[in-house]
Length: 274
Image (spheres, rainbow, N blue to C red):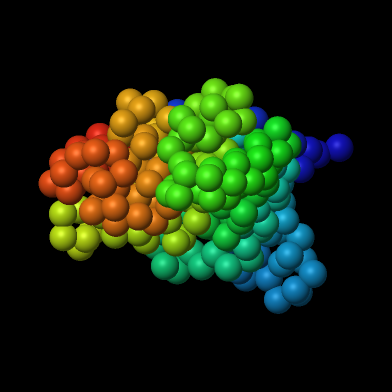
């Protein structure tokens, strides 16, 4: 019995460090088999046989789809959802591939798969529920914020909320980050001395290798690592939506100092994310 092309090749996932560019090193036999299968599919007049040939290409590269999905593991979307997204993108690539365009199938497929996985974060990542303990703390923080605002006649500080709930300040910051840090509204909040910039501008651009969603996911831990005063300013600016003048009055500094703090912090965060 003659083995099928799929049985003749190694379909193990490609090493992850080879996925940092689209020029991925794949065993020559796999590339050659893919090319032959797709050439046959392009010439095939029977749609059922054409799909069968394309499906063989998909099976051939499922390891690559799993490897690409694994690069985004642990960032708020279930592993199986990421793998499914990459797999469906691989199928789409096999169905739509046109060899006449002069692009190798693997280059086309990798771009398609990475794009689809990243789209999952753009569409769903910020809506994923945080862990249950954080969900509970979010409700407690919201209640404490309302009660303290009424008692104090002003917005409470992070430390005051933490003391009221008898929890660490870092936990309060995490709850606040999970609750609002990744929403479009907070990312569009104006910053800078003249308000001409927005928080979202600290997210690296396309050439940095990070999507907006990935940068958002990285933003909360970077904020938690800041000194207390700087976290306080960010909290008041982006979660309480206070102006620089209001922040200056609340923490006892000048508006110019608040502006400098924001500029310095955003530069730090931009450096960490870039």
